[in-house]
Image 1: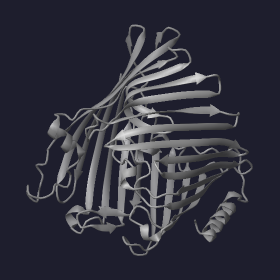
Image 2: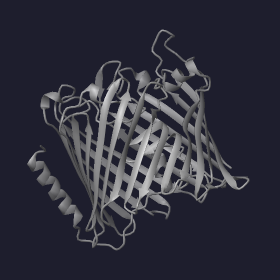
Image 3: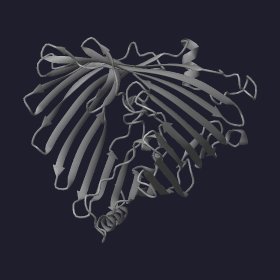
Image 4: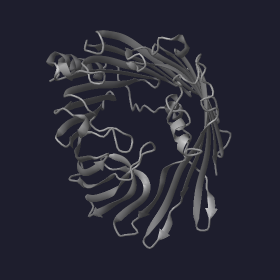
Length: 477
């Protein structure tokens, strides 16, 4: 179990930060729309307009994306074209139907012609797109192609086609899903189909399952789900149950996951202290049984559920406090303990982590957002790394120039990268980035994002500095 002294210290930390002397009224922390673009450029707004089609309406969006990656060794240029379409509800009987399509085409503009070290050497920018283009020109993908029937069958919703199943688990699948409302408190659902993969053949794979969601009281919700998996010749039973409970000043969730003989427990708590507006978060996770390779499925079609790893405990405590109209302070403590120290590895290790943030909103202008982040890691020695103590930091800045223009810049730090060529663990990868989006009207959007990575990943200087340029153009009909 987690060391008792660490827990006591963490609780004292939360207690000190959760009850500040200075109070404030009605604090609500709202991040800008462009915040997500710091890590995921190209996140355009939803489709607002549509083309009339008889009694329905077609919403259509075309997005073109260009990406250039370059370093002192070589470079690579890719082009992607995305198509999104959906229809407004069409009335059928007492219900309605909607349809959705989301697809992609892509090409490698310069192929692998920039092998500066010669054709016999490994090509640094070889990626999944290069592999797809070997089998299919323009590397077509269909992310979604579905129809949804809402109450066409009384008290029942039905989805069919390719879609993202989202109940207690999130799977991408080709198949069908239904949810039936039984009274006002109980939903029962079932699903069956084939997992989706863009990399391997899943024609012989299959899974099915079902579950229920029960609103036991106005403050208590119980959910449970069972999935039978026959994927990659692994015959698995996967079960998850969740209890959600509203309590004074917050919510608590208890979750149990079982994959064959391996069990995991999760406790989540989120609370707000009314007088100060302080937000407190608690997460405790424990894996009670070792998980081996044959009890997990780690390839894209399903989920990263209980990867092969040894037993561990994880505790995370966090607190966020607003001060006035412009400042938010956050702090947290995370500790992970591997129950058998001999089973530590690169992805499952003993460590203590202290982290925090200072967010500034509306200074110097109303549309300025600044976030300073810091982490202190103390990683215990194991077979992969020696004792490792490191302070890392980052900063994010978003600025809305006017109603049409947003810009952002920042720097961030990643730890524990793996140099697979030299079979070494490196722990210093800093990223710098700057970007902006221009939306002159409701039809067009343009985005450019530039990033620079300075890494210890490789011993050769040719690969230490990597530059990436992303350009997006979006048309909404």
